[in-house]
Amino acid sequence: MKKQLLFLFISMSSVSAIYAESYFTIVDLSERNSTIYQDMETLHAHNAFNKENIDIILKKHNVSDVDELLYFLNRDKAQLNTHINSLKTTRFLQAFVMGGIGILSGIYALNLFLNPTGHLKQQFPEEIAKMNLSSDSTISQEILTKKYRTLSLKFHPDKNKGNEETTNQQFIEMKNAYDKLGEYLLNIPLYKKILSTLSSTFLGSLPFILHANKKNLTQATTTLKNLDEIILSLEEIQQEEENI
Image (cartoon, rainbow, N blue to C red; front, side):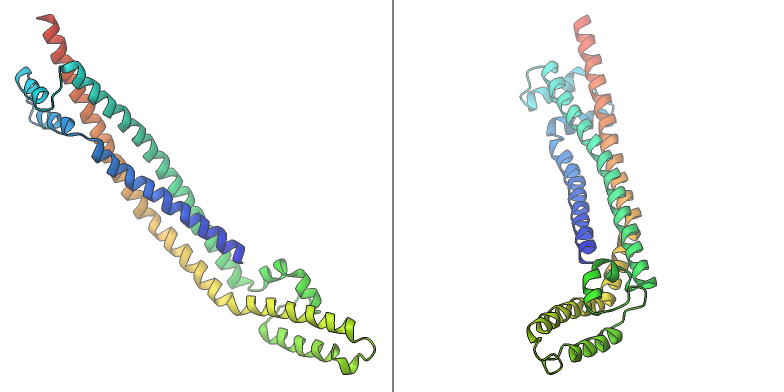
C-alpha cells in the first residue's frame, strides 16, 4: 500500500506543477502585453485608429514607424498563440491526472473497505507463509497475535534442545514477519482515510480547476482576437499611406 500512496503522491506533485504552469502562463501573458499593446488596445476600444493617434504612440514609445510597431505586435501575437496552445494542453493534462488520481484512490479505498487484507496477502506472501497463516482466510490482528504466541512456544529453546540454532533463526524470521503484517493491519484505517480523502478531494475539485482554466483560456483567446483586429487596422492604415 505504501507504493500506491507514493505513486499517488508523485501524481499529486505533477498536478501541482501543471497547475503552477497554467497560473504562471497567465501571469506571463499579462507581463508580455507591453505598454505598446495596451495603448493600441485603448485606441481599438474607442475606435480611434487614425494616423494622428498612431503617430503619438510611435513617438511615445520611441518606435520608428508602423512597420516596427507591427513587428512588436506580431511578436506578441506569436507568443500569445504559443501560450494558448500550452493552456489547452495543460487543461487536458490536469483533467487526465486529477481524474486518474481520484478514480485510483477511490478504487484502492473501496478495495480496502471490501477486502481489508487482500492487498496484505498479495504484498506479503512470504511473511504469511512464515506465520503459517492460510492465504484463503481472513487475517486480523487477533488471529495474527494468536498465531505469534503459538509459534513462539513452538520455537522456544526448551522445546528444541539440540536444535536451538535452527529454531532461533526460524523464530527471528517469524518475528520479522509478525512485525510487518502487524504494522500493515495497524495502518489499514489510516490508509482508508487517506485514500478516501484523496478521492473525494481530487474528484470534487476537478470541476473548479477546469472552470478556472477555461476562464484563463477565454481571457487569452479574447486578447488574441483583439490583437488580430489591432494588427489588421494598422495594416489598413499602412496600406492607405502607401496609396497616397
